Each structure stands twice: as C-alpha cells, then as structure tokens.
Amino acid sequence: MLLVVLILTGILVATDPAFADPLRNASKQRIGNYDLEMTTEPINPVAGNPVNILLRIAGVNGDDLVDVPIVIRLAKDGGELHRTNPIIVPYGHHSFEYTFAKAGRHALYVDVKDYAYSGETLTFTFLINIAGPFDNLIIMIPLAGGVAAAGGSAMVFIRRKKRQIERLK
Image (cartoon, rainbow, N blue to C red; front, side):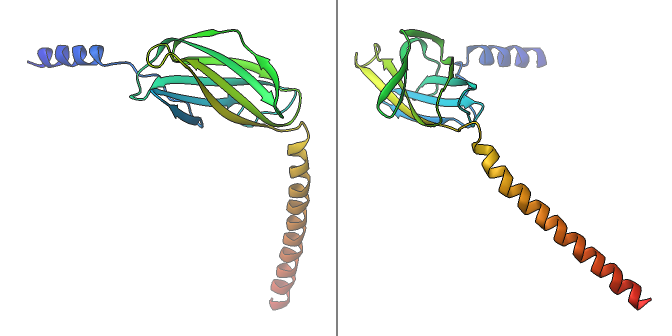
C-alpha cells in the first residue's frame, strides 16, 4: 500500500506544471497576459561597475513562457544608451550584463513581442538608480564622525561613573 502511495505521489509531482522561479527583491509589472520581474545584482548598482540585470517572464497564472522574443533598451535623460538585438528567452529567465558609465536614474525598457495573444509589442518600463562611485563614501563619513563622537562621550561617561564609585568607597 505504501508503495502505491509513493508511486502516485511521484506521478502527481512529475505531472505538476513547472513555474519560473520568482526573483528576490524584484520590481514587478503586469501587462496583458504577461508578468515581468526585474532585479539587479548588486541590488544597489554603482557607475563604472558591471551590473547583472535579471529578468523573469511568466504568464499571469505563473507558468513558464518558453521562447519569448524580447528587446532590451537602456536610456538616460531621454537618450538611448544601448539596444540589444532580438533575444529569445528560452525558459522564462534572462540575464543581461551592462556597465553604466554615469550615475543617476536610468530607464530599462523590455519590449516583449506578444505573438501568442495580441500580435503587438508590449513595453515594460523599469527605473534603475545608479549610484556614483563616491555616493556611499559621502554617507559613511558623517556616520563615522557620529559614531566617534558617541564613542568619545561614552568614554567620558564611564570615567565619571568610575570616579563616583571611587568616592563612595
């Protein structure tokens, strides 16, 4: 009996539809029958360093979309920086590496050719904020100064407490 249950469970799992893995920390959009997710690695990209842009394309019910044609476009301040040739996304996921030359807000456009339903091109738009190479340093300097000042006041406080304890003895 246990063997029959195991076999039936195996058959059910094997016939279950496969779903494209969702991306972590992703921006999501839905247009028509498509869900598109986008995230970057690293999550906080810096100008001058390569950024891996991860895309997930799925149907609205979560199923994998196979062989979906897309074009990726990157723009800043209305000017196009990069455009790919048509890419066929085989199993719902695509990864694209790009190095942004300048800091600021960039637009990522993903044009999906909707052969299955409308025959039109659907454009998904995502914003990517690119930090300058010294942006994090500017934040860290005041923070480090604040920590040092707090540490100095803690030392004064500890010394005063020691003196008060010594007086009581």
